[in-house]
Image (cartoon, rainbow, N blue to C red; front, side, top):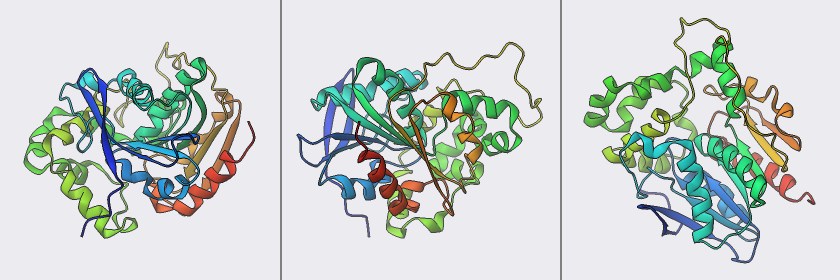
Length: 303
């Protein structure tokens, strides 16, 4: 049994990239643009899309490299500027001038970048980020925090070409079983998990998904490196985020501990933090009622 599909259509962004995209809700309603993380799809947001699509235009692509969307095999096709650019090009292709960006995990990382760029040109009204660290805070933790560095060693495994043979032989599931310790398989509906396991057998998609990590500028030191900021290191020169921003954080996330919340008020001026207790990393579907309620409160605020 496979999950009931959310209806998708293919959106050509130009430059050889097309994204399979859900676009539900009134076309003249405020737009919510949802970005999924690794190693999932638009279905990360299945509960939110169904909840909000009566009042909002809910747009959720399978991002570059995922499922049926375009999946170039060159690592450099997945640098953050290109992934952020895809979001604005998708909005352009759908004639969406302004939107609220919503992201989880890698989608949340891209959402930070979309929000920072979109506040400058007026296109992004609000941001909702679920269990995705701010880039400056995350890099600092990787250098100084033992828990975060230990939790992020899987990234080094994802980047290691010595694992490519394993991916070619077993698909994405092989490297996930080897490197990841933060999955909670019992939390996902069996039919959803079965569909993901089948999708992870696509070798082109497997390498494309890994390329998100391989193209990232984030530095993950080995466990035996000093727990200190490197000499001369400065955080990324990013502007302060000033648009209304909701950060939803599952407090039992083994990949991204709550230390990632520390210091957010210094880089986001209009910040709302909603902790979700007793929940692991995949908060949009592990705790959908809590996420929907937090988003309801945030989206009902007057500008």
